[in-house]
Image (cartoon, rainbow, N blue to C red):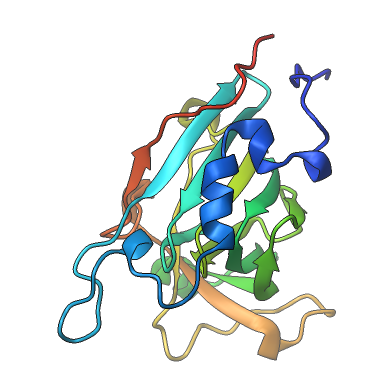
Length: 227
């Protein structure tokens, strides 16, 4: 299938200035741990009394792909979520974040207990810091299809999803958390998987994100994408 990708620089060549974020990138370059304004003022106990929300800048969407940018203030988190049947290219335009990602482990004969608990085994793929201009690609069944991001500095994550999310076509976004089950049910793991590598993930109800996760719609200032 041919995709109608717009004529933009290659992913590794895209810069903040190409998508209208040159000023924000400059602020991020000058940011340090003592900066307070991007993440709200401090309360008596040192916690943030308010936090700037994550902003999503929508660029383009078609039947074959969608494109947008998540602008994340320091300490903000995009919770653990998946990309069913999708390939996703993510490029960090500026800043530094911590990425944690997993892939499902296929269990050939899941037990009744496993299904009752609504938990699934997964394998850790990535657990490290990323700094601009790093690029990652995940696939439907590998590369860390289930992932979460935590901003260390102000940062912007440019995403291309192919195909895009679509609840009608079975590509709804689901959110997950690490299971609190102390003794996961016994399962037969593939031979190449060490049991010490297994993390048990539990899906949140009704495709709803965790409480407190807020994404505001921001204004995209870059070039308009037309087919």
